[in-house]
Length: 122
Image 1 (cartoon, rainbow, N blue to C red):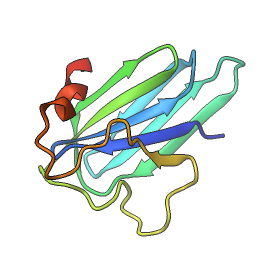
Image 2 (image 1 turned 90 degrees about the vertical axis):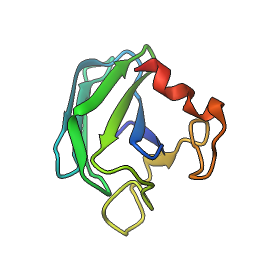
Image 3 (image 1 turned 120 degrees about the horizontal axis):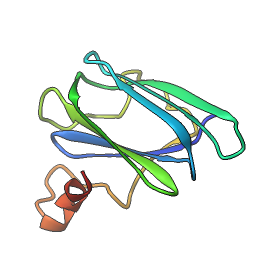
Image 4 (image 1 turned 180 degrees about the vertical axis):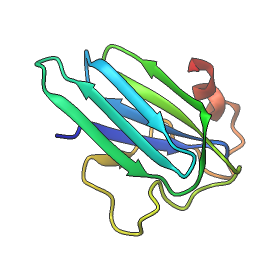
């Protein structure tokens, strides 16, 4: 089973919002080659886990997780600044549980200061 995963990016980070209310035993792993792994127990004891092969390399020490009541937000630092064409390395259509987080999305040329607010939660 997979929880819904919403993603957004900045030039230096990728944000993943994992919709899993009241999750327990949360484990997040970031591999420098761009492998992101997540696992957790749901409120009814069901196991959720998935791995994503991200578009580019990442900095494991720059990966932070913020656990809220309704979801888990992961901030993943890119090894090189720049805008990724997509979230995943594969050019195939992403799994149906992965969606763009339009509420947090910023365009590459968007210099609006409000677009930077997400950095404040980490």
